[in-house]
Image (cartoon, rainbow, N blue to C red; front, side, top):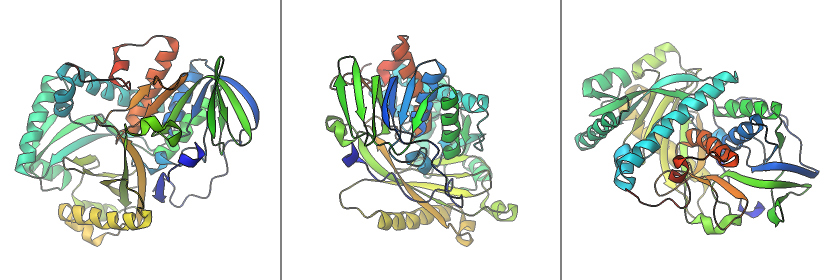
Length: 414
């Protein structure tokens, strides 16, 4: 597994900007440990899964190769959206209306569940509920989006159509129309992950940093995870690394890797925010690649998107410089006042996308006693919570039809 590690981010996310270097929070694994569940990956998925199992009384050991919460989780812009990456219309074309609606309902429930968990654990992570506006820039896209809105309404999802004038009043954007929904949220993903890990540890989970898993070997009654300084014997291992590493080469073809980008302002005064015309909400476009904007709790404006596929021999610094220009070129016509506002913060993240934008959660026939939670697309926080729920259900033997929607073997069924 060591040779497979990709650079999960470039640049300094706003969540880490200006913060003093954090001491190592957890020890390096040494010696031999015995547990029921081993988790590989110390980002938000690993944290939520460790907490779910530990809170249920299941012994857990979590191993992070570098520093917890500082990989793809820290690179997230943390729009906790109820809507999956693919619109309801597109999923219905692939899987039929009933299954597509259930996938959307699960996504909504997962956002509600994560918000409730963060509130119940009293995690201080700048969590605030915010409306979402999904907008279309031209008439053709608006017609398609309006049909999407009608389908959502028929399926029982709360959504409001807003026309060009209402969209401009709410967001400052001059576009053809959009869908407004409620119940999404924004938060600080780094602090959220640390808070959940802390709760997992208090519930009994053992957490280790700088403990890269170099190989996993089968045992008569489980698996053995090897690191440079220790081993973990477990009944089962959960791979929560976000994408399939080279140790799982047969799975790599199921994913396409993307770079995503975010630029950000310094904290803006009210007099600077007002000319932008954008309310404190989560704004994203229908275009491909899509673009999005949102404020942080300290009134920084984050502008993101411009996703590009990962290709060999790419230079991260050059890609980041290009993306900074592209993001400004896209948003300055939308927010003319942005021309006078600097965006000194910029970073690049890495994520994996599956063909249907949905994650793979559960077992794979090639890997006995392994469970996977991979391929979240742009909805990492939402699907991380879902993965924790489904994997614990699987362990407890209380699975439902929901599991089949996210397994490796899902097929087109109507």
